[in-house]
Image (cartoon, rainbow, N blue to C red):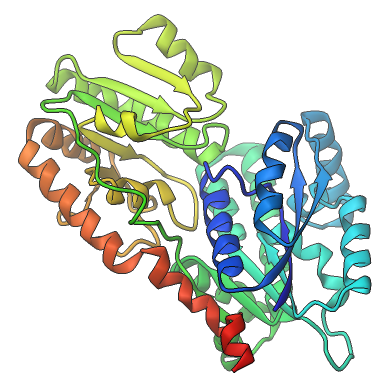
Length: 415
C-alpha cells in the first residue's frame, strides 16, 4: 500500500512515549512492504536526525516548526475567538496544509495516517470525498486528549481551571467530529477508546458505527533487543525518567519529591533519587546543586541501561495523563521493579502485587518504595513477572500484527 503518514513531531530518536510508538509503527509498516511517505513537523534541534528517518521511508518531507510562549499566547487568544481548541490552532501551519494538499493531489495514496490529534486537521479536506478510489483515513489517536485536559482542570483552581475546562470541552467536541469523519481510529488502550466513545456519543454516531471504527493497539517493546539488566546488589537508589518538560511528568515527580521522598528518607537513610530526562525544570536542577549527595539530575542520556542497573526501584508517579506509559513497559522488559499510580498503570494489564506495586496516596506510595528498598527478593519477583508480562502481551512482533487488518502486507495483497 502507498501510505501518507503525518506526524506532529519527528519520531526519531524514539526517546519519548509518542515518538517511541510512532517509530515502531513506521518500522513495522515498512517491514511489511508498504511505501510510506512521511511528513513531519521538525524543530531546529531535530534536523540532525532527519537523515535516519529519510533512510527508513520511501519519501520524507520536513516542515519547520518553531514554538515560543509569545506564539502560544497568540494562538490561545485566537482560539478564544475561533472557538477551536488551542492545540489545533497552535499546530495549524500553512506550509503543512499546502504540502499535504499537494501530495494528495499528485499521488494516488491508498491511505492517509494522521498520527496524533493535531495532524487530523490536515486530512479533513479529504474526508467524505466522492471519488471511486478515495484513500482510507486513519486517525492514530494515541490517547483521548480531551480526557487529559479534563484531568488537568480537576487538579487546577481559579482561572487556570476555567481555561483547562474550556479547552477540554472543545477538544471533546473536536475529537467526536474527527472520529465520525475518519474511517478508522487507533487507541493504545481500552480506556482511551471508551473516552473517545463517550465523546462520540454526543455526535450522534451509532454504537455499531463506532465499534467498526476503533482498534486498540497498545504500545509495544522489542523484547529481543531490550534485555533484563544486571542490577546492583543492595542499591539504595530510586530511579525515574521521562520527558521532563511535559507537565504531567514534572507534576508527578514534584509530588514524589515534596510529599513522598521525605517519608522514604526517614525510613531508609542514605537513599538517593535519580531523575533522568530531557529539559529538566529549574527546580529539579537546583535540587542537585543544593543536595548533590541525594539528588542526581543528568538530563537527557542516550543509553538508559546503566541508570536502570544502578537502581533498586523505578518510580512512575503520574497523577495526570492518558494513554500508556512506555517507560513502565521498558522497565518491565529490563526486569526492573516498578512503583506507580493507578493513572500511571492505565492501559497496561499488570496486577498490583504481582507485576508492579500501585499506590495513589503519599503514605502508601512511600510504603511501597520502602518495601522494595528493603526486600531484594521482592525486587527480583516483580522484575521477573514484569518481564514475562511484556514477552507475552506487549512484544512488538505479536501486537503490531493487528495493523495487518487495515494495512495488508504486500505479499498478501499480491496473493
